Image (cartoon, rainbow, N blue to C red):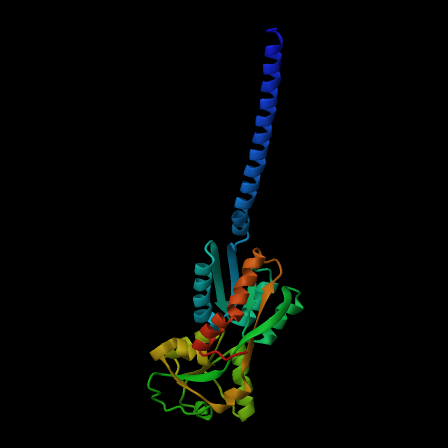
Length: 273
């Protein structure tokens, strides 16, 4: 009579073991479900922006884009925005020549077309802001420059941007519209270089963008002229083919085009697109 007892105990133990195994399996499933739900934030984290965005931008955008770059990095920890500022024509030539860049912001549709015609743009460039010319003179305007015509005075040393550069092309358009002829002491390769000539007192005046006069503060004085309305430049921006961190590059472009970006740009003297 004692023999069956161990068998019943053994069967009972097996049953209990099976129950325990089931409980462990259930626990494992529950644990797995818990892990799965806990990985969702990690998934979101992996979707966060990261990497470096290399932006080629017109020299006149230096102050505004530097500000936006810092804001972008603060909003997206782990990202970095690097800039190459210069004449739009030179930047376009660098891009078509194979220079690594993710975003191009040009000071004119004409220079942007160099990039799109070469097939280096991804998508269609979009105008994000506009800029207008202004005369930069020495502080206090000692030569009493009050118009574009005043710059034709042979005693004045005037600097212009090179005509292949957007600010130079705009100046030429304004001069042609007014029927004026002007012989500058030098043609500069970007708007910042033209402005620097006045800041260093190597020139009496320069035709630059209103935004550059604004950025220079009390180093120069700005003089508006009506002909500038005939030579307003549109600024297009585009994602470039071969961008390393596409989503991050797109996000930077989105910031530039956002209300926040527009506020920074208009605060620097740019016009709404």
